[in-house]
Length: 245
Image 1 (cartoon, rainbow, N blue to C red):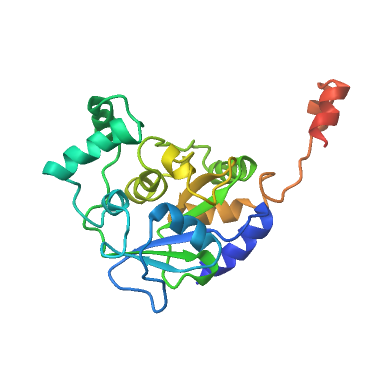
Image 2 (image 1 turned 30 degrees about the horizontal axis):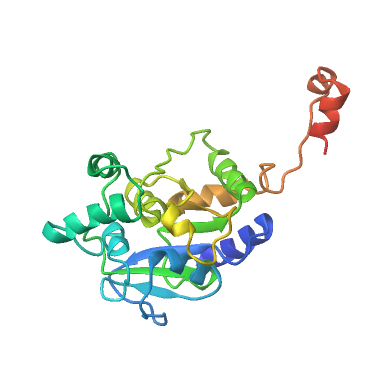
């Protein structure tokens, strides 16, 4: 279970508060986990701080979260009408139902029917292989993760920043295989426990091996900057001082 060792190392390198969150879609429940009612947005914080949560359709207390995780069908009929009215007139996240429709139509669809359980664990406690590793982090830590991810390939992340937080942070990276950075939807940001500077970085596990390989090679990890003499000579004294900090 290499991910348990990965967790210790990445926490130390980045100076994380709490643990990376391992997210696994599974057809069976973990041996030990909370099955109380949960909202996905709360789960990220609870699990970062040590809890293991088995999320299912029956214990998800947010219907939108259930839908975006792929645990149930999207709302239809009167439920769909009520949701549109809430988003436009209640949350006021969209100016019209047309704007909401565009947001949905231009986003990756949820992983409907993929599994009956979505298991959230502190990475060092994860019983199952992660599908996605999620970080609740600050801007500098997010920058370092994106840099470590791109170190081997130079391929930039293809971000999807619209829609609900659970869509951005879980569904999109699961379905697309892409790393995602989420500023979260504004309603989620107001949930108690998130700081003004918090953001989410979600890395599919198949990419996470590259992140770990890059730590000792990349300055976003532990590598030290080295300035070739010819390049040093081309810099002003002030520029040299800045690079050598």
